[in-house]
Length: 243
Image (cartoon, rainbow, N blue to C red):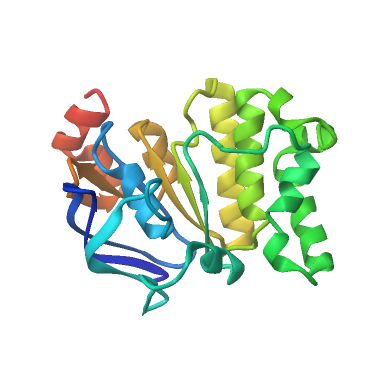
């Protein structure tokens, strides 16, 4: 397993958001977490990324393993510096007053001395998202919502991390941009072998994109399996696929 949660419980003060969930992701996989609003999907990603309060919940018990070793004591910036994982948060959180190019360069701060490698990664981002190449000198706050989401993904790629976690990447996107985004992510997985964990409320799109998935409901995993298995699960179909 590249990343594994074991009996993970997290909370915000006295409110428990995850009630002992366990799941894992193999290196090179695309895995999705689906569920309704308030199911605990974003809390899961924030806990895995080891972000601090008040942005993220506190881990109260259980463990998070990366390549078999606990990361509960690892600072979030060290996870990025060591190229272990990067989070594309809900809401994008790009630096609107900086240009596209400057946003991408900001993500490489911890990679000083790797100019050749960073140049390759910049070209990868622009190849995946040609719109960003066209707008590389434009202030990011002037980009469309879809272009800002592409930039948020590109910024995560610039960290050189083995695992990219995305929180609701399709939110607010027109269908054509949404599918363009997921096609680019699949190419990234196919060509570079980068592991992807995606949280999505659009269950149908998420299961089409991922090879495996887990279903979260009020802080508990209620179903898991391949995308085909989940798509044919009567409970999942009724609750999340409109069938």
